[in-house]
Length: 197
Image (cartoon, one colour):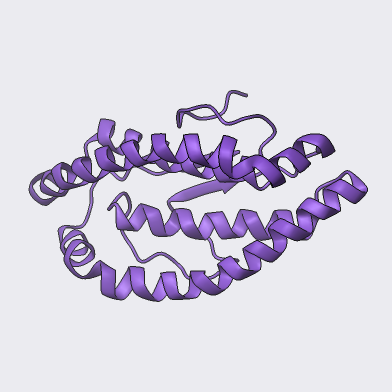
């Protein structure tokens, strides 16, 4: 999985203020309302891909494309909510973003036993431990977002270390869900560093 985003050399103070104080109304609410309907489709693709793997032993291309686009949309939204990039996140599954590079390779082979185990026990051994760690990372991210707000407000620059931690937190969460949805090959590590080539 590849998830990279651009650390801008300068950020817009106006966009920063608008997103921080009014973003919930013009970014979060309309996007989340649409994403709720897309999540229903995600549930279908999760069940469909699970049984497709169990019966045929490979990952269905249409579900792979759906999840890649679904998580690209979520990542675009996340980047704006945490003020990591300027601009409005494009709505829709087939949209691109000038600041975001996100690619999920189609698994060449998928282990049927592991797929069945993830389907039955995934919430216990995948989501529960990782979401506990993710909750702590989110608390840190929120504190960093406040500090970064003032840094951008006065300097037009997002502190590089904070930016890196925020992106790693996003990558960490996406990787966990990719594994849960049978798209990431190994149990996800408890960090958000890029995958080793």
